[in-house]
Image 1 (spheres, rainbow, N blue to C red):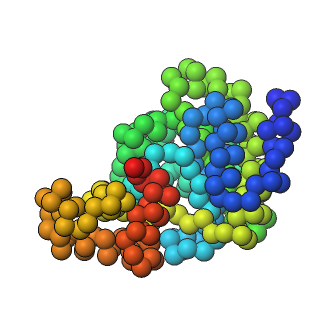
Image 2 (cartoon, rainbow, N blue to C red):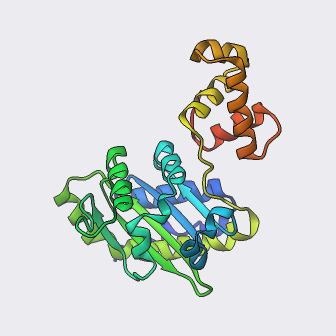
Length: 250
């Protein structure tokens, strides 16, 4: 067990926002050798019944590529993710590669794993955390190491990772579940993201239509759809919100 766990966890009491927790998670997992992560916390029953899609006490933080997060939400992959399903009963970290349970996956589970592989998520360590009131926390830690190096990494870090995950999960639930909701990302289509990017750049609907070779009416239709998804009343706010989600940058 590494001696600097106290130092790694030392500033948890100072974290008071989703942004702060996201940065902390990134630095902690990078220190163990994992380049990216996803973290989700929700009620186990909500996950099993699909009620998590309606909101509730869902916390979601990640630094993986926004295109994968968008795809995961659009396809409702949480309902077809074999690792999420296994976390419902697992107590210990699950090591996985692109061939995880290859001979026992459903068609949708296979599709989900293939999509993850295509985006570059080919192996990782998943840590399930079962809380006293039925909540489930899941840390998914991703690696792009070669198989041999990855096996050595998980062999030397999985115990520390589990200890760290429990402390990080506890802190996030105490702060974020009461101070701010961190919902699952709102899925946007590629066209909607493209239109918002040009909107953020100051282009009018007519100019965007000319750039994308679509009508001004179609541009406004997409903008209206995004505003409804985000629950905002103007396109500037919608564009700002999309940028805040990391869907694009100027």
